[in-house]
Every structure is written in C-alpha cells, then in structure tokens.
Image (cartoon, rainbow, N blue to C red; front, side, top):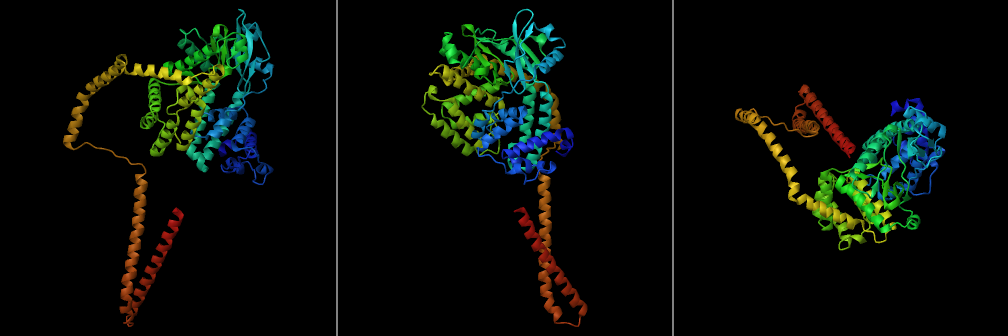
Length: 559
C-alpha cells in the first residue's frame, strides 16, 4: 500500500474514499487496514463520529453510490455473491442505482470520432446529441446511417477508463491490507474477489466482446423467429464504441402498452421462458441480466434482446450436473444433492457435511409435495442464500448468475401471466436433457474418447512398462511423499524434545546434588568438595526455576 500511496496523484482519491467510508460508519476498514495512519486521519476526527441511523446494508449501498461508477459496479457484482455477504446485504445491493447525468456532448462526439477515425458526418447522416440512456460507464445515442437505417451508438464515457483504473489500484491496495489485518477479510478472500471484479469490469468495458456475444446469440437463435438480436455494424465497432441496429418495441414490463398493442401476454411469458431456458440448457451461453429494460416486444410478438455485455457460460458437464441436481432435489434425495454439489465444486473440505445435509433436507421438505407452479423462485432464492452463507459454500459465478436470471424471469413472467410457471417449463427441458443423457446416441462420443485414451495408453505402455518393472526388480523405484508443513512440525518437536531434555537433566542434577549435599556437609574439612556441590546445586536449581518460568510464559503466549 505504501508504494501506491506514494503516487501523489492517487492520494486525493484515497482521502475521498476514506472519508466516505468513515462517514457511513465503516471506519474499521480505514483504521484497521492502516490507511488512516498513512493519510493522517485521526480517530477523533468529526467524520469518525458521524454515524447513520440506517441499517448497515443500507449504509453500504449509500457509500458505494457516493463513491461512483467503479464502486457501484463492485456492489452489483457483490450482489451476486451469497457466499460472501448475508441475504440482507444482497437484497440491498440489488437496489444500487446506475443512472447518472449524461456526459457533455462535445466530449462524447470527440470520442466517437477519435475511435472511428473519421468525422461524425462521414459515418452517420444524423446523431441525436441527447442520449436515450446514460449509465455510469457508458451512454447510448440514437443515430441514422446514410443508408437510412436507424442505429444506436453505445460509447464509453470520456475519462471513465482512467477513473476505473485508479479506483481498481486503490481497491487492490485496500483488499491486500484488509486481508492481512482483518479476520473477516481473510475468510472471504477479498483479494480474489477484487481480482474477479477487475476481470468482470474490464470485460464489460470491451465492446468488441459485447459485439461477439451478440453475434453468438444471433447464431444460436437463427432458426428461432421469436427472438431478435440487433445486427452489429462491424465496420463501426471499436473497443470503446459499439454501433448496432436500433430495436424498437415495448418494454416487457409495460403491461398497459402490451395490452393496447394487442399482444398475447401469456404467450410472451412462455416465449421468454423458452428463450432463457434454451440459452441455459441447450446452448450453455445465456444472458446474465435479462431484466425488463433489456427485453422488448416488437411487432408480431417478437422478443428483442439488447445489452449483451454480461453473459454466463455452462459447458456440457455443467448442464448435466445441473439436470442431475434438479432431479435429486425434486426427489428429496439429500444425499444425491450433496453429491452433486460436491461434483460441481460448491463444497470444500472445510464444510461440515452433516450439518449441511440437515439444512438441505430441511429446505427440500419445505417444498415437498408442492406443485412446481406453487414454488416461488424468489422465495427459493432466499433459502439458498441462507444455506450458502451459513456454510460458506463456493457457488461458481456462472451458476449464481443463472439462478438470478431465472428469478428475474419469474418476476417478469408473473406480471405478464398470473399463472406463470417457470419451474414447470424448466422441468420439461430437464427431463428432455435427461433422456438425451441416457439415450444410445449419447454413448458414442464418451466411448470414442475412452477408446482414444486407451489407444494412447497402449502406445505408451510397451515403452514405459518395462522401464517401471526393471526399476521395481532392481529396487530403484522411488516414491516421493510430501506432507505440507512437515518441516515446521519436525522443528517444533525438536524444540520441545530439547527443552524437555534440559528439564530432565536439571531435575536429575537437583535430585542427585540434594542427595550428595548432606554427605559433603558432614565432612566440612573438604572445602573444595563443599563449594563444588553447593555451587552445582544452586546452578541446577536456577536452571530449573528458569525452565519453569519459560514454559509458563510460552504456554501463556500460545493461549
């Protein structure tokens, strides 16, 4: 941290962050990490005493909003980490507002021209200087190409990258200091959280990546007439500017407008659910933020999808594990649920599996016998959050993103259709996936892979086999066994044995000299013998007293 603080240009931002944290009652983070001492902030400062009456989760949200774009994004990412924060924090951080005043048009215009390396009038026939949307990282402007086609321009706010990089440097400094000094930060592994957040934020600010996501979604749904992904104008795409087709439609949660346009809300809810579940279980590539602002209903009931910067991935094995987990849960098979969670990397060696199994079984029995349409995804989410946080389970980010996407879709679907049943539709896809898993057609690829592995082994075995057998026969086979911290354990044992030996020797000397002392005193004529025995007795006694005090002091220190 000291090296970072020496960068003078960062010190004002450090001071601003420290002041905001203290103002909202998070002084422990400032004083406990040593940041206050380096910034000359005293505990007696007025800010230290300034506390809010709001609950802790509310104060955290307010502090993040006041700290700006980077920290707002941090809060949004933390709202997807129930393994780090308890449910009440997750719920509050989901309220973070990302709406900000738009950047000055002259600066935005200059950025677009610099990125496209041409005047705005060359690329576009018209650009509306008033944005149709403005967020902390970017803003969106409507435009028209010279061909007459309507498009939108998504552009990173000027100066945002510099702000984000400075904040990330400071965030890493704080994370490292917190993990070194605060127990809760060590348990949560806040440095890893900071690393994941930085990677996510950099990906969200890369519009090449978002454009590729849109292309992939379009390819996955090219046979689906019910879904529309905006066409990317690749000749007008850079890392900081994204130009794509303008999708016109009604937001998915605008019930009055949908009814006025004569749309079938029940069919829309079903189509949207089919779309999300296909993304998850068939494609393994899904929209990570399918809230109503990112979904539009176009003419003919076609669903338009935008804002594809946040996506989730599931490989084939992930989808199979998910299907098996769903089946085990529906059968109230807690043993199988725990086994699947273990296969998915959710459980590590520190988890008390017996207690976890009890909590999982209690949750499953809560929903036992209920029709799927009567199970609320948001209620199930709260139960999952409690278990995840209580047992410190490590839910993979993509899996949690998936769960959140389903919860969002259920909320939207319920508004569209009161009889909406997301789990019923999900169950149908799961059963179909299960049938595909056990069908003879599914056996081919694994058998081919196994055969290839055996063939490779047979190529190597004739060469390696004789060498191994010869080493065994000659007694040259060596096995290396490494036990973590074994050297420390041996050193500790050596130290204890040495001290114990000293104690035994001291006790033996004291006892032996105590027996000799009366004999010597009865013969005072031998002065030299008397002096030697008495001196040795006093020395041995002093050594014994020293060892007693030493052991007591060592024991107290370890306790």
